[in-house]
Image (cartoon, rainbow, N blue to C red):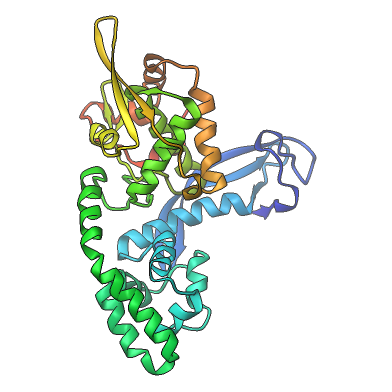
Length: 342
């Protein structure tokens, strides 16, 4: 199988490097090996219609690699890349200083932030230092290899984090009301962050204007499942169930009531009470990278002109929904690759 990075184009106009003919995108379920274990992934490739030879790109390889990494991290409790970045930023340290305190190789932490998956032992170590009391003990143990100024600055920062730990417990309690499962196939392995979720909702409302709750449920579903299909990781951290009016986030009513920056206004439409969501502030777009913002815009542009009833009917055509509706089951993100609307 060959790589075609040298001639990447718009997917619809991808040209075969062999014949100049048409290339089409295909998905195939494959078993791939990672650290001597086998993982089932959806593997994307481009097929030359003339020669039937298969090609991949760096981008398409990244999709199945992310699937493997997510499954591995979920299985062994290894922190995800975004969590590794967040814990370092929480303590205000450089990547090299984190490596020094934890006894890693000089550039090891930096490689982890660049999506290299930690070993089991290093992964457990990183997860443990999410508790600032544990990290403080490691800082104390590293006193002899830090300058006095470095030691004092780091210790004071970690002690401040310990004092603020009650706020983290409050945030964790609120998050547990919203995010109904740990990072897994049931929420697309997305970060479980209330701030991130809030700003995704605000971004949608800023882009689309006031939006009925029913329609917002479908927009979130398509945004999350498209993100998983294209990148191997969802955006919001929400899990979904197949309900009467289509896929909806679990406990969606709690989601929309969670944030003071978003209000719900009641409207009566044809003798039915409906609720519309409105943003009171602009989103902090810095919590989303350009690719994530483009996925949100792509979905919103696709469905912006549809009513709540229309988008619900459209979602009923998805086998993602129909396969799970009978028992109103939770929907696996592994079914994202069967989407018809996007």
